[in-house]
Every structure is written in C-alpha cells, then in structure tokens.
Length: 190
Length: 64
Image 1 (tube, chains in turn green, brown):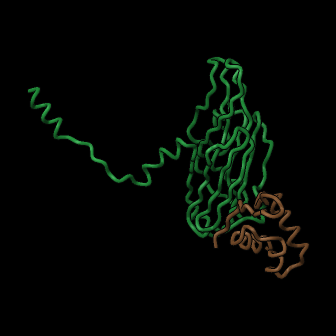
Image 2: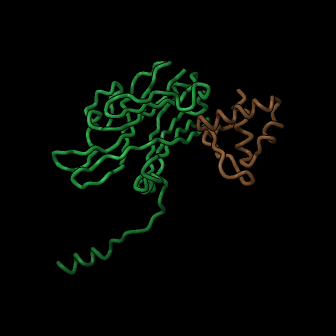
Image 3: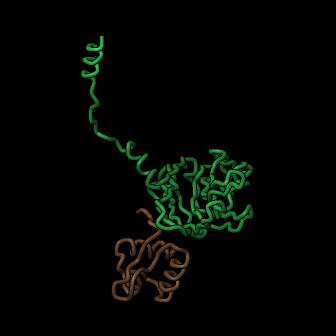
C-alpha cells in the first residue's frame, strides 16, 4: 500500500507555465500600486473634471477642482482609472487619474502622521477604499475613492484601518468616524 | 484654450525653451509666460533643473 502511494506520488508533477499579466497584480499590490477602474461609458457626452476633497479630524478642509474647471475633458474611451503609486516618502503620496484615450494626470497628496502612543512613535500609513456606486448627477461631486490614514486605537494600543469595504457617498460609513485624515478623490461631470 | 496648445509642444520636446514655445504659437510672448506660470502653479507642468539643463515635467499628459 505504501509502495503504491509512493508510486502515485511520483507520477504527479508541478509544471512551469507562462505567467499572465494578471499574475503580476499581487506583486504590484505588494509593492504599493493600487488601482480602481470605473466604467464611464455613460458620461460620453459630458466633460469630466477631476475633483478632490480633504477631511481632517472630521472637518472638510478642502474641496476644489484638481486643476480647475478649464481642464475638463470629454472621455474618448470608456474607462476611468484612479491609481496610487508606491510611496516615495512619508510626507506625500503620488496618485493619478487616467481617462482612457484622453489624458493621464499625476498629482501629489500631503500625508499626516499618526502618533502611536504605546510605541512612542509617529506612523504614516494610508489605505484606500472605493465608494459605493451612486446615480450620476451633472454638476455634482461624484466620490469614487477614499484615501485615508490609519488611526491609533487606545483600547488595544494598536494602529488600525478597518471597517466597511466600500464607503457610502453620503459619508455615513462608520469607518469615517475614526480616520483622522482622508481624501475623497472623485469627479464632476459637466 | 492656449494651455492645450502649449502642452503638446512640451510633450513633444521636454527641453523646449520659452522662446521655442512662443515661436510655435501665434500669440503674445507674455501670454505664453503667464499661461506657463499658471500651469506651473496648478501642477500641470513642472520646470525641473537649472538654466542650461532645465526641462519640463508634464503631469497632465493629454492624448492626441
């Protein structure tokens, strides 16, 4: 019986196969790349303007067009990508908007460190969450991706970033009560 | 919009000088200066490096 099992085992093998592009995604994510894609095919007749909001300790501290309404573009393709590049330092994060066949914009977001009291050190770590889909309304801010900081949990003396996996467009998601500093990256359709 | 005329010039030649950009556009010299200044402030382009080796970093890449 043992000999049979051994022989069966020998007959099996793991073959090397050609990796596909999708196989690299885990590596990209581990390296710090994060991408969200959105179908904007329903916005073909609109001009899309990049828009950004910033919240600090629950208060909106910034709400403005990324480049100004003069830089609004009609999408030539069907896809909008909002991506994040690997962090180069603790104070800024590069992100990009890419409207298929239309434009790619690379910008920077300022980061704020969180004090990890039990370890007596400052930590800078941000994570992303997509927003729940909502109806498209022209001339109104459409939130797409949240980029937010970890927070310090005094009870368990750890830093964390946990809660809902998607954020409600009306900002009622529980996770937002804890995130000390976050950006909402979105668009306005004209 | 003049900005959308300036951007392709810089995209094709990141070492383009103010003079070269001005020559390719049928506008006042100061218009180019003002628009490039506004583009730098907005974060559409960056001027990187010193006088001799300065080049344009294009942050808004518009497809043809």
